[in-house]
Image 1 (cartoon, one colour):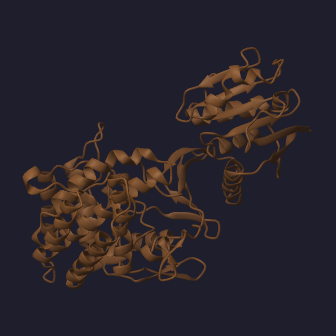
Image 2 (cartoon, rainbow, N blue to C red):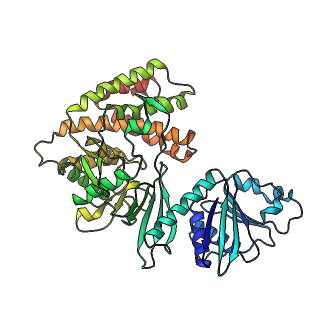
Image 3 (cartoon, rainbow, N blue to C red):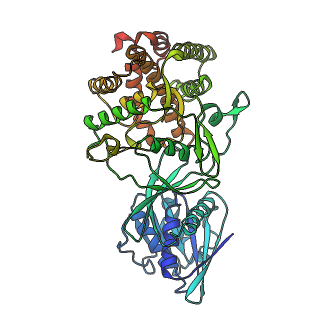
Length: 500
Protein backbone atom coordinates (compact mmCIF):
# COMPACT_ATOMS: atom_id res chain seq x y z
CA UNK A 1 0.00 0.00 0.00
CA UNK A 2 1.20 3.51 -0.87
CA UNK A 3 -0.06 6.72 0.73
CA UNK A 4 0.40 10.28 -0.49
CA UNK A 5 -0.97 13.71 0.29
CA UNK A 6 -1.99 15.74 -2.77
CA UNK A 7 -1.92 19.35 -1.63
CA UNK A 8 -4.13 20.78 -4.36
CA UNK A 9 -5.68 20.20 -7.77
CA UNK A 10 -2.34 20.79 -9.52
CA UNK A 11 -0.75 17.93 -7.57
CA UNK A 12 -3.74 15.71 -8.41
CA UNK A 13 -3.21 16.47 -12.10
CA UNK A 14 0.50 15.70 -11.81
CA UNK A 15 -0.34 12.42 -10.11
CA UNK A 16 -2.57 11.62 -13.09
CA UNK A 17 0.32 12.40 -15.46
CA UNK A 18 2.60 10.07 -13.54
CA UNK A 19 0.12 7.19 -13.51
CA UNK A 20 -0.66 7.66 -17.21
CA UNK A 21 2.99 7.03 -18.04
CA UNK A 22 2.85 3.72 -16.13
CA UNK A 23 -0.29 2.25 -17.72
CA UNK A 24 -0.23 -0.70 -20.08
CA UNK A 25 -2.91 -2.76 -21.86
CA UNK A 26 -4.88 -4.82 -19.36
CA UNK A 27 -4.50 -2.36 -16.48
CA UNK A 28 -7.63 -1.53 -14.50
CA UNK A 29 -7.71 1.32 -11.97
CA UNK A 30 -10.60 1.42 -9.49
CA UNK A 31 -11.23 5.02 -8.35
CA UNK A 32 -12.83 5.32 -4.92
CA UNK A 33 -13.91 8.54 -3.24
CA UNK A 34 -16.80 10.83 -2.41
CA UNK A 35 -18.18 13.39 -4.85
CA UNK A 36 -15.61 16.11 -5.42
CA UNK A 37 -12.73 14.05 -4.03
CA UNK A 38 -10.76 14.40 -7.26
CA UNK A 39 -11.58 11.22 -9.17
CA UNK A 40 -12.60 13.07 -12.33
CA UNK A 41 -9.65 15.47 -12.11
CA UNK A 42 -7.33 12.49 -11.91
CA UNK A 43 -9.06 10.64 -14.77
CA UNK A 44 -8.96 13.68 -17.07
CA UNK A 45 -5.26 14.12 -16.40
CA UNK A 46 -4.56 10.47 -17.24
CA UNK A 47 -6.49 10.63 -20.51
CA UNK A 48 -5.04 13.98 -21.59
CA UNK A 49 -1.50 12.81 -20.87
CA UNK A 50 -1.93 9.68 -22.97
CA UNK A 51 -3.51 11.81 -25.72
CA UNK A 52 -0.67 14.35 -25.54
CA UNK A 53 -3.33 17.08 -25.49
CA UNK A 54 -3.79 19.06 -22.25
CA UNK A 55 -6.89 20.73 -23.71
CA UNK A 56 -8.64 17.51 -24.80
CA UNK A 57 -12.35 17.52 -23.99
CA UNK A 58 -12.92 14.74 -21.44
CA UNK A 59 -16.63 14.64 -20.55
CA UNK A 60 -17.89 12.85 -17.48
CA UNK A 61 -19.30 9.38 -18.22
CA UNK A 62 -22.01 9.83 -15.55
CA UNK A 63 -24.86 9.48 -18.05
CA UNK A 64 -23.20 7.48 -20.83
CA UNK A 65 -21.64 5.10 -18.25
CA UNK A 66 -18.50 4.74 -20.38
CA UNK A 67 -16.38 6.97 -22.60
CA UNK A 68 -13.88 5.34 -24.97
CA UNK A 69 -10.71 7.04 -26.21
CA UNK A 70 -8.81 5.54 -29.15
CA UNK A 71 -5.33 6.78 -28.25
CA UNK A 72 -1.81 5.34 -28.45
CA UNK A 73 -2.99 3.36 -25.43
CA UNK A 74 -6.76 2.85 -25.84
CA UNK A 75 -8.48 3.80 -22.63
CA UNK A 76 -12.04 3.65 -21.33
CA UNK A 77 -13.45 5.76 -18.51
CA UNK A 78 -16.32 4.02 -16.68
CA UNK A 79 -18.78 5.51 -14.18
CA UNK A 80 -20.75 2.68 -12.55
CA UNK A 81 -22.86 4.85 -10.22
CA UNK A 82 -26.02 4.26 -12.25
CA UNK A 83 -25.70 0.56 -13.07
CA UNK A 84 -28.38 -1.64 -11.52
CA UNK A 85 -26.59 -4.98 -11.82
CA UNK A 86 -22.90 -5.95 -12.06
CA UNK A 87 -23.77 -8.05 -15.11
CA UNK A 88 -24.14 -4.78 -17.03
CA UNK A 89 -20.34 -4.69 -17.16
CA UNK A 90 -20.54 -7.32 -19.90
CA UNK A 91 -22.69 -5.02 -22.01
CA UNK A 92 -20.41 -2.05 -21.33
CA UNK A 93 -17.45 -3.98 -22.76
CA UNK A 94 -15.03 -3.93 -19.82
CA UNK A 95 -13.34 -7.19 -20.79
CA UNK A 96 -13.04 -6.18 -24.45
CA UNK A 97 -11.36 -2.91 -23.52
CA UNK A 98 -8.93 -4.57 -21.12
CA UNK A 99 -7.88 -6.93 -23.91
CA UNK A 100 -6.43 -4.00 -25.85
CA UNK A 101 -6.16 -1.05 -23.47
CA UNK A 102 -6.61 0.26 -19.93
CA UNK A 103 -9.69 1.17 -17.88
CA UNK A 104 -10.49 3.79 -15.25
CA UNK A 105 -13.50 2.78 -13.16
CA UNK A 106 -15.33 5.21 -10.88
CA UNK A 107 -17.68 3.74 -8.25
CA UNK A 108 -16.04 0.30 -8.56
CA UNK A 109 -17.91 -0.98 -5.49
CA UNK A 110 -20.97 -1.32 -7.76
CA UNK A 111 -19.10 -3.95 -9.75
CA UNK A 112 -19.49 -6.37 -6.80
CA UNK A 113 -16.09 -7.96 -7.23
CA UNK A 114 -16.29 -8.23 -11.03
CA UNK A 115 -13.15 -6.19 -11.69
CA UNK A 116 -10.18 -8.31 -12.80
CA UNK A 117 -7.50 -9.64 -10.50
CA UNK A 118 -4.55 -7.28 -10.49
CA UNK A 119 -6.73 -4.17 -10.45
CA UNK A 120 -5.28 -1.28 -8.48
CA UNK A 121 -7.53 0.70 -6.15
CA UNK A 122 -6.93 4.44 -5.76
CA UNK A 123 -8.82 5.97 -2.85
CA UNK A 124 -9.09 9.78 -2.63
CA UNK A 125 -10.34 11.47 0.53
CA UNK A 126 -10.81 15.16 1.31
CA UNK A 127 -8.07 16.58 3.55
CA UNK A 128 -8.38 20.32 4.00
CA UNK A 129 -7.62 22.11 0.73
CA UNK A 130 -6.18 18.91 -0.70
CA UNK A 131 -6.80 15.20 -0.51
CA UNK A 132 -5.18 12.09 0.90
CA UNK A 133 -4.43 9.27 -1.52
CA UNK A 134 -4.14 5.55 -0.85
CA UNK A 135 -2.99 3.13 -3.56
CA UNK A 136 -3.61 -0.55 -2.96
CA UNK A 137 -2.98 -3.58 -5.13
CA UNK A 138 -0.55 -6.25 -6.21
CA UNK A 139 0.97 -7.30 -9.47
CA UNK A 140 2.68 -5.58 -12.41
CA UNK A 141 0.38 -2.54 -12.57
CA UNK A 142 0.97 -1.78 -8.89
CA UNK A 143 4.73 -2.19 -9.38
CA UNK A 144 4.70 0.25 -12.30
CA UNK A 145 2.70 2.82 -10.39
CA UNK A 146 5.12 2.56 -7.47
CA UNK A 147 8.01 3.10 -9.89
CA UNK A 148 6.44 6.14 -11.54
CA UNK A 149 6.02 7.71 -8.11
CA UNK A 150 9.71 7.07 -7.39
CA UNK A 151 10.49 9.03 -10.56
CA UNK A 152 8.35 11.93 -9.31
CA UNK A 153 10.13 11.78 -5.94
CA UNK A 154 13.46 11.97 -7.79
CA UNK A 155 12.32 15.16 -9.55
CA UNK A 156 11.13 16.56 -6.25
CA UNK A 157 14.52 15.95 -4.64
CA UNK A 158 16.13 17.96 -7.43
CA UNK A 159 13.77 20.92 -7.19
CA UNK A 160 11.55 19.89 -10.13
CA UNK A 161 8.42 18.85 -8.24
CA UNK A 162 6.16 20.99 -10.45
CA UNK A 163 7.68 19.84 -13.76
CA UNK A 164 5.40 18.18 -16.27
CA UNK A 165 6.18 14.67 -17.47
CA UNK A 166 5.02 13.39 -20.85
CA UNK A 167 5.70 10.28 -22.91
CA UNK A 168 8.87 9.89 -24.93
CA UNK A 169 9.02 6.14 -25.35
CA UNK A 170 11.29 3.26 -24.56
CA UNK A 171 13.27 0.74 -26.54
CA UNK A 172 13.67 -2.99 -26.86
CA UNK A 173 14.98 -3.16 -23.29
CA UNK A 174 13.29 -2.43 -19.97
CA UNK A 175 14.43 1.20 -20.09
CA UNK A 176 11.88 3.99 -20.36
CA UNK A 177 12.13 7.69 -21.11
CA UNK A 178 9.99 10.76 -20.41
CA UNK A 179 10.17 14.35 -21.43
CA UNK A 180 10.33 16.68 -18.44
CA UNK A 181 9.01 20.16 -19.22
CA UNK A 182 10.30 22.90 -16.93
CA UNK A 183 8.52 26.15 -16.08
CA UNK A 184 11.28 27.98 -17.97
CA UNK A 185 10.21 26.31 -21.20
CA UNK A 186 13.30 24.10 -21.29
CA UNK A 187 13.02 20.35 -21.67
CA UNK A 188 14.97 17.56 -20.01
CA UNK A 189 14.95 13.79 -20.51
CA UNK A 190 14.16 11.46 -17.61
CA UNK A 191 15.77 8.05 -18.07
CA UNK A 192 14.19 5.20 -16.11
CA UNK A 193 16.55 2.23 -16.09
CA UNK A 194 15.99 -0.03 -13.07
CA UNK A 195 18.72 -2.47 -12.20
CA UNK A 196 18.45 -5.59 -14.36
CA UNK A 197 17.27 -8.80 -12.75
CA UNK A 198 19.51 -11.83 -13.24
CA UNK A 199 18.29 -14.33 -15.80
CA UNK A 200 18.73 -18.08 -15.93
CA UNK A 201 22.29 -19.42 -15.77
CA UNK A 202 23.43 -20.26 -19.31
CA UNK A 203 27.17 -20.91 -19.36
CA UNK A 204 30.13 -20.78 -17.00
CA UNK A 205 27.80 -20.04 -14.07
CA UNK A 206 26.71 -16.76 -15.71
CA UNK A 207 23.45 -15.40 -17.08
CA UNK A 208 23.00 -13.68 -20.45
CA UNK A 209 23.71 -10.11 -19.34
CA UNK A 210 26.99 -11.18 -17.75
CA UNK A 211 28.14 -13.20 -20.75
CA UNK A 212 27.18 -10.49 -23.25
CA UNK A 213 28.47 -7.69 -20.97
CA UNK A 214 25.09 -5.93 -21.07
CA UNK A 215 24.81 -2.99 -18.69
CA UNK A 216 22.88 -3.95 -15.56
CA UNK A 217 22.62 -0.45 -14.11
CA UNK A 218 23.09 3.18 -15.21
CA UNK A 219 26.75 3.48 -14.16
CA UNK A 220 28.10 2.60 -17.64
CA UNK A 221 25.87 5.21 -19.29
CA UNK A 222 27.16 7.93 -16.97
CA UNK A 223 30.76 6.82 -17.53
CA UNK A 224 30.55 6.62 -21.34
CA UNK A 225 28.70 9.94 -21.58
CA UNK A 226 31.49 11.60 -19.63
CA UNK A 227 34.16 10.07 -21.87
CA UNK A 228 32.42 11.13 -25.08
CA UNK A 229 31.94 14.68 -23.84
CA UNK A 230 35.58 14.92 -22.75
CA UNK A 231 36.63 13.87 -26.27
CA UNK A 232 34.47 16.60 -27.81
CA UNK A 233 31.52 14.49 -28.96
CA UNK A 234 27.90 15.44 -28.50
CA UNK A 235 26.39 13.18 -25.84
CA UNK A 236 23.75 14.13 -23.27
CA UNK A 237 25.07 15.72 -20.11
CA UNK A 238 23.95 13.88 -16.96
CA UNK A 239 22.33 16.67 -14.91
CA UNK A 240 21.21 14.57 -11.94
CA UNK A 241 21.47 10.90 -11.04
CA UNK A 242 20.32 8.27 -8.60
CA UNK A 243 22.69 5.45 -9.46
CA UNK A 244 21.11 3.01 -7.01
CA UNK A 245 17.57 3.44 -8.30
CA UNK A 246 18.62 3.76 -11.93
CA UNK A 247 17.21 7.22 -12.63
CA UNK A 248 18.98 9.89 -14.66
CA UNK A 249 18.01 13.43 -15.63
CA UNK A 250 19.63 14.16 -18.99
CA UNK A 251 20.19 17.03 -21.32
CA UNK A 252 17.73 17.02 -24.23
CA UNK A 253 19.73 16.88 -27.46
CA UNK A 254 16.66 17.61 -29.59
CA UNK A 255 14.65 15.61 -32.08
CA UNK A 256 16.49 15.97 -35.40
CA UNK A 257 16.81 12.70 -37.28
CA UNK A 258 19.08 11.18 -39.90
CA UNK A 259 15.85 10.06 -41.64
CA UNK A 260 13.54 12.17 -43.75
CA UNK A 261 9.84 12.75 -42.99
CA UNK A 262 8.97 9.49 -44.74
CA UNK A 263 11.47 7.46 -42.72
CA UNK A 264 14.03 7.09 -45.52
CA UNK A 265 17.76 7.53 -44.82
CA UNK A 266 19.34 10.89 -45.64
CA UNK A 267 22.71 9.93 -47.02
CA UNK A 268 24.53 13.15 -46.10
CA UNK A 269 23.49 12.77 -42.46
CA UNK A 270 24.54 9.14 -42.34
CA UNK A 271 27.87 10.29 -43.81
CA UNK A 272 28.21 12.74 -40.91
CA UNK A 273 27.80 9.84 -38.49
CA UNK A 274 30.41 7.79 -40.40
CA UNK A 275 32.88 10.67 -40.07
CA UNK A 276 32.04 10.95 -36.36
CA UNK A 277 32.83 7.26 -35.89
CA UNK A 278 36.15 7.78 -37.68
CA UNK A 279 37.01 10.54 -35.20
CA UNK A 280 35.92 8.41 -32.26
CA UNK A 281 38.07 5.48 -33.37
CA UNK A 282 41.08 7.78 -33.66
CA UNK A 283 40.54 9.39 -30.24
CA UNK A 284 42.57 8.40 -27.17
CA UNK A 285 41.07 5.28 -25.62
CA UNK A 286 40.25 5.18 -21.92
CA UNK A 287 39.41 1.76 -20.49
CA UNK A 288 38.68 2.83 -16.89
CA UNK A 289 36.20 5.68 -16.78
CA UNK A 290 35.42 7.81 -13.73
CA UNK A 291 31.88 8.05 -12.39
CA UNK A 292 30.55 10.35 -9.61
CA UNK A 293 30.73 9.05 -6.05
CA UNK A 294 34.34 7.90 -6.65
CA UNK A 295 33.27 4.99 -8.82
CA UNK A 296 35.16 3.68 -11.84
CA UNK A 297 33.61 1.85 -14.79
CA UNK A 298 35.94 -0.66 -16.44
CA UNK A 299 34.75 -0.88 -20.04
CA UNK A 300 34.32 -4.60 -20.79
CA UNK A 301 35.81 -6.31 -23.85
CA UNK A 302 33.71 -7.55 -26.74
CA UNK A 303 35.30 -10.92 -26.24
CA UNK A 304 34.70 -14.44 -27.47
CA UNK A 305 32.10 -15.19 -24.80
CA UNK A 306 30.11 -12.05 -25.68
CA UNK A 307 30.23 -12.67 -29.42
CA UNK A 308 29.28 -16.31 -29.07
CA UNK A 309 26.39 -15.79 -26.66
CA UNK A 310 24.99 -13.16 -29.04
CA UNK A 311 25.16 -15.28 -32.19
CA UNK A 312 23.70 -18.23 -30.27
CA UNK A 313 20.42 -16.30 -30.29
CA UNK A 314 20.12 -17.45 -33.90
CA UNK A 315 20.21 -21.14 -32.99
CA UNK A 316 18.29 -20.68 -29.72
CA UNK A 317 15.43 -18.52 -31.04
CA UNK A 318 15.46 -17.87 -34.80
CA UNK A 319 16.15 -21.36 -36.12
CA UNK A 320 13.44 -23.04 -33.98
CA UNK A 321 10.98 -20.36 -35.09
CA UNK A 322 11.86 -20.85 -38.75
CA UNK A 323 11.87 -24.66 -38.73
CA UNK A 324 9.13 -25.26 -36.18
CA UNK A 325 11.49 -27.27 -33.98
CA UNK A 326 14.73 -26.96 -32.07
CA UNK A 327 18.07 -26.59 -33.79
CA UNK A 328 19.84 -29.90 -34.35
CA UNK A 329 22.71 -30.39 -31.91
CA UNK A 330 25.19 -30.95 -34.73
CA UNK A 331 24.09 -27.74 -36.47
CA UNK A 332 24.53 -25.71 -33.29
CA UNK A 333 27.95 -27.25 -32.66
CA UNK A 334 29.14 -26.50 -36.19
CA UNK A 335 27.77 -22.94 -35.96
CA UNK A 336 29.75 -22.34 -32.76
CA UNK A 337 32.93 -23.75 -34.33
CA UNK A 338 32.55 -21.50 -37.39
CA UNK A 339 32.27 -18.47 -35.14
CA UNK A 340 35.26 -19.55 -33.08
CA UNK A 341 37.33 -19.48 -36.28
CA UNK A 342 35.92 -16.09 -37.32
CA UNK A 343 36.65 -14.63 -33.88
CA UNK A 344 40.22 -15.88 -34.20
CA UNK A 345 40.42 -14.20 -37.61
CA UNK A 346 39.62 -10.72 -36.29
CA UNK A 347 42.08 -10.97 -33.38
CA UNK A 348 44.63 -8.88 -35.29
CA UNK A 349 42.11 -6.17 -36.21
CA UNK A 350 41.74 -2.67 -34.81
CA UNK A 351 40.18 -2.38 -31.33
CA UNK A 352 38.55 0.67 -29.77
CA UNK A 353 35.42 1.78 -27.95
CA UNK A 354 32.23 0.41 -29.52
CA UNK A 355 28.99 2.23 -28.79
CA UNK A 356 27.18 -0.94 -29.98
CA UNK A 357 23.96 0.46 -31.51
CA UNK A 358 24.94 3.30 -33.83
CA UNK A 359 21.80 3.41 -35.92
CA UNK A 360 18.94 5.78 -36.67
CA UNK A 361 16.99 5.63 -33.35
CA UNK A 362 20.14 6.54 -31.42
CA UNK A 363 21.35 9.49 -33.48
CA UNK A 364 20.17 13.08 -33.07
CA UNK A 365 21.14 15.26 -36.03
CA UNK A 366 21.07 19.05 -35.92
CA UNK A 367 22.01 21.57 -38.58
CA UNK A 368 25.27 23.18 -37.47
CA UNK A 369 28.56 24.27 -39.08
CA UNK A 370 30.72 21.88 -37.05
CA UNK A 371 30.45 18.11 -37.30
CA UNK A 372 30.80 17.78 -33.52
CA UNK A 373 27.62 19.85 -33.09
CA UNK A 374 25.63 18.09 -35.82
CA UNK A 375 25.78 14.49 -34.56
CA UNK A 376 24.35 13.61 -31.15
CA UNK A 377 24.96 10.12 -29.73
CA UNK A 378 22.52 8.18 -27.55
CA UNK A 379 22.00 4.72 -26.04
CA UNK A 380 25.61 3.72 -25.42
CA UNK A 381 25.35 2.08 -21.99
CA UNK A 382 26.37 -1.29 -23.48
CA UNK A 383 29.62 0.08 -24.94
CA UNK A 384 32.59 -2.29 -25.07
CA UNK A 385 36.10 -2.39 -26.43
CA UNK A 386 36.32 -4.44 -29.59
CA UNK A 387 36.58 -4.34 -33.40
CA UNK A 388 35.92 -0.80 -34.63
CA UNK A 389 34.20 -2.29 -37.66
CA UNK A 390 31.21 -3.25 -35.48
CA UNK A 391 29.86 0.29 -35.09
CA UNK A 392 30.40 1.04 -38.79
CA UNK A 393 28.43 -2.10 -39.64
CA UNK A 394 25.61 -1.08 -37.29
CA UNK A 395 25.37 2.26 -39.10
CA UNK A 396 25.78 1.09 -42.70
CA UNK A 397 23.38 -1.82 -42.14
CA UNK A 398 20.86 0.09 -40.01
CA UNK A 399 18.66 -2.47 -38.26
CA UNK A 400 15.58 -0.21 -38.40
CA UNK A 401 15.97 1.31 -41.89
CA UNK A 402 16.83 -0.20 -45.25
CA UNK A 403 20.12 1.20 -46.53
CA UNK A 404 20.45 0.36 -50.25
CA UNK A 405 23.62 -1.55 -51.07
CA UNK A 406 25.14 1.22 -53.19
CA UNK A 407 24.51 3.78 -50.46
CA UNK A 408 26.09 1.44 -47.93
CA UNK A 409 29.23 1.17 -50.07
CA UNK A 410 29.46 4.96 -50.30
CA UNK A 411 29.07 5.33 -46.54
CA UNK A 412 31.78 2.76 -45.96
CA UNK A 413 34.01 4.71 -48.34
CA UNK A 414 33.30 7.91 -46.35
CA UNK A 415 34.55 6.20 -43.19
CA UNK A 416 37.63 4.75 -44.90
CA UNK A 417 38.48 8.11 -46.46
CA UNK A 418 38.26 9.76 -43.04
CA UNK A 419 40.80 7.23 -41.70
CA UNK A 420 43.19 7.64 -44.64
CA UNK A 421 45.75 9.77 -42.80
CA UNK A 422 46.02 7.22 -39.99
CA UNK A 423 49.07 5.23 -41.13
CA UNK A 424 48.38 2.42 -38.66
CA UNK A 425 44.94 1.84 -40.20
CA UNK A 426 44.68 -1.13 -42.60
CA UNK A 427 41.70 -0.60 -44.93
CA UNK A 428 41.60 -4.13 -46.33
CA UNK A 429 41.77 -5.72 -42.91
CA UNK A 430 39.01 -3.34 -41.81
CA UNK A 431 36.79 -4.46 -44.73
CA UNK A 432 37.33 -8.07 -43.63
CA UNK A 433 36.40 -7.22 -40.05
CA UNK A 434 33.44 -5.17 -41.27
CA UNK A 435 31.99 -8.21 -43.07
CA UNK A 436 32.50 -10.45 -40.02
CA UNK A 437 31.00 -7.94 -37.60
CA UNK A 438 28.05 -7.26 -39.90
CA UNK A 439 27.36 -10.99 -40.02
CA UNK A 440 27.74 -11.33 -36.26
CA UNK A 441 25.33 -8.46 -35.61
CA UNK A 442 22.70 -9.74 -38.02
CA UNK A 443 22.86 -13.28 -36.67
CA UNK A 444 22.19 -11.80 -33.24
CA UNK A 445 19.36 -9.59 -34.51
CA UNK A 446 17.53 -12.49 -36.15
CA UNK A 447 17.34 -14.13 -32.74
CA UNK A 448 16.44 -10.92 -30.95
CA UNK A 449 13.45 -10.21 -33.19
CA UNK A 450 12.01 -13.65 -32.44
CA UNK A 451 12.78 -13.39 -28.73
CA UNK A 452 11.09 -9.99 -28.50
CA UNK A 453 8.04 -11.46 -30.18
CA UNK A 454 7.77 -14.77 -28.34
CA UNK A 455 9.13 -13.97 -24.88
CA UNK A 456 8.45 -10.26 -24.48
CA UNK A 457 5.19 -9.89 -26.40
CA UNK A 458 6.57 -7.30 -28.83
CA UNK A 459 5.62 -8.59 -32.29
CA UNK A 460 6.29 -5.25 -33.99
CA UNK A 461 10.00 -6.01 -34.22
CA UNK A 462 9.33 -8.91 -36.59
CA UNK A 463 8.85 -6.40 -39.40
CA UNK A 464 12.63 -5.96 -39.42
CA UNK A 465 13.23 -9.63 -40.22
CA UNK A 466 13.38 -9.37 -44.06
CA UNK A 467 15.85 -6.48 -43.86
CA UNK A 468 18.08 -8.34 -41.41
CA UNK A 469 18.15 -11.41 -43.65
CA UNK A 470 19.05 -9.23 -46.65
CA UNK A 471 21.88 -7.60 -44.69
CA UNK A 472 23.17 -11.00 -43.60
CA UNK A 473 23.06 -12.17 -47.21
CA UNK A 474 25.13 -9.16 -48.30
CA UNK A 475 27.67 -9.51 -45.47
CA UNK A 476 28.33 -13.19 -46.09
CA UNK A 477 29.28 -12.52 -49.71
CA UNK A 478 32.80 -11.76 -48.42
CA UNK A 479 35.11 -14.77 -49.01
CA UNK A 480 36.17 -14.92 -45.36
CA UNK A 481 32.57 -15.82 -44.47
CA UNK A 482 32.22 -18.71 -46.93
CA UNK A 483 31.91 -21.39 -44.18
CA UNK A 484 29.20 -19.40 -42.42
CA UNK A 485 27.36 -18.80 -45.66
CA UNK A 486 27.43 -22.51 -46.50
CA UNK A 487 25.95 -23.28 -43.06
CA UNK A 488 23.22 -20.63 -43.47
CA UNK A 489 22.26 -22.04 -46.87
CA UNK A 490 22.28 -25.64 -45.66
CA UNK A 491 20.00 -24.81 -42.69
CA UNK A 492 17.61 -22.89 -44.96
CA UNK A 493 18.24 -19.47 -43.43
CA UNK A 494 19.64 -18.06 -46.68
CA UNK A 495 18.94 -19.12 -50.21
CA UNK A 496 21.59 -20.66 -52.40
CA UNK A 497 23.31 -18.78 -55.22
CA UNK A 498 20.90 -20.34 -57.70
CA UNK A 499 17.96 -18.89 -55.73
CA UNK A 500 19.28 -15.33 -55.83
